[in-house]
Image 1 (cartoon, rainbow, N blue to C red):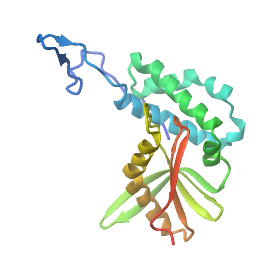
Image 2: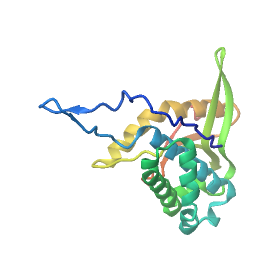
Image 3: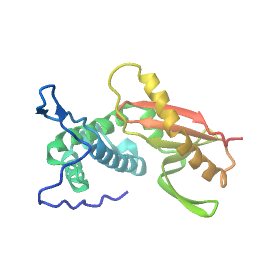
Image 4: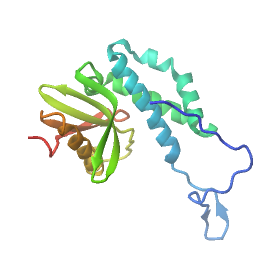
Length: 214
């Protein structure tokens, strides 16, 4: 995955419709409440995906938390190039570091990223869907214990209660996407296919057999 710089105009920017001021009962505009998400969260995911690929392709055994934290300045520059606003850079950098260090310390994360048979990261596939060519990109796929795994990385966060319900809802949200990946690989791989979502910020994993599995 490459990171392409995002050019930003230095002139005054137009107001952003999505962030509207809250009007008080007296009719005065109060400062807007802004949930840290949107494009900054997307760019955190981009940097995390890129580094997880380095973990997998270069051998996760060679990575330590100290080595990851030594790259904090690089991650900050990458986030700036992607277009994260200066006032969000510190928070974004720390979330990148948190996701990567938790993945390194998580046994399931090391299983996902470790040396595996026929492993590929950021695997690109092109499949025909009727008259349309569909381009797919798989975060991670490998064979383990006779099963073909397809795993997507999600840098989702969750605060509050019922983490299990949140993870279940994420499975529902992304199931059809992963099933498309399974359908594409089933055309060239006859082994049972299992799907998974890995959440590095939460050190959580959800896996299930694909409906295309024999």
